[in-house]
Length: 114
Image 1 (cartoon, rainbow, N blue to C red):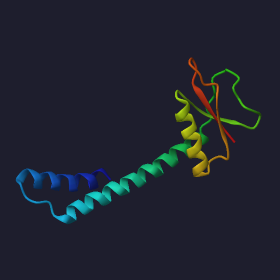
Image 2 (image 1 turned 135 degrees about the vertical axis):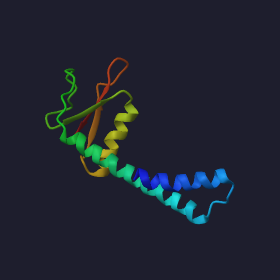
Image 3 (image 1 turned 135 degrees about the horizontal axis):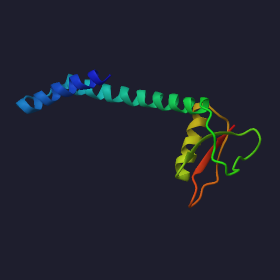
Image 4 (image 1 turned 30 degrees about the horizontal axis):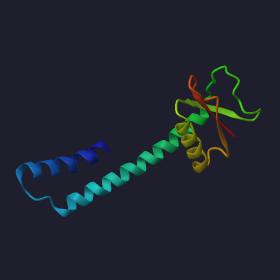
């Protein structure tokens, strides 16, 4: 994938340095590569979320578990990051609900899911 990015970039750079006009095909190819890489990034993010569920992490011993059937995922410094990770998991179908607990000025937010 890196090679596919490098070839059009090198051709584009060589054309710009030598003063030739860039053909429309090279610009179209570069746009296509950029779009396909963003799709790959989305797939990588989904795979990372699935991996987080499969890993068994141990929460810090603060007693923030919302209930008996909740599973700990990770800790986040910002509440918005915790909420975004929880929402992404719901959208991708990894869990049905989430809660961000125990966050504050001196502790991180814990993401718990069902």
